[in-house]
Image (cartoon, rainbow, N blue to C red):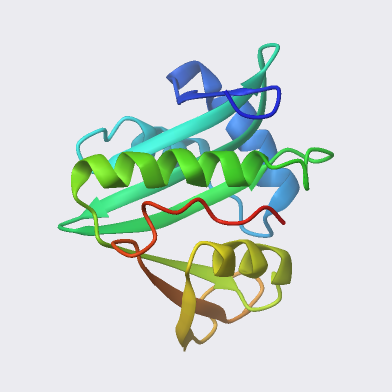
Length: 160
């Protein structure tokens, strides 16, 4: 348990709440079908939620490719930002990655999303390139970031 919430694996019944967070936080929210496809693919995906009193505060979806972890999505419910929900979700993912022998992580983040970039820097991510016009609806570029987990897994990132 972190803060006043717990972290657990996503269940199908959570999709409505995940969709609400997607629609509130992202200019290109995932569809119900996309989310269901992701959360039911337990072989290569791991989706978790932070829950308090039955309410989902945030969620994280990662994909595993060989010895790499790819952050697919990370969202926090409106009004819950800045409380450490995303940090708790990432801490949980890093602990799971250690048990799987994962050594590297990657993600794409909108170039304008400075708050998310600051969070990812704390986890050892550094920019390695830009995907031009990555976000179809807005035409915005995405910053491609990588992290070496092998050197970071034992250390908890500093609190913001």
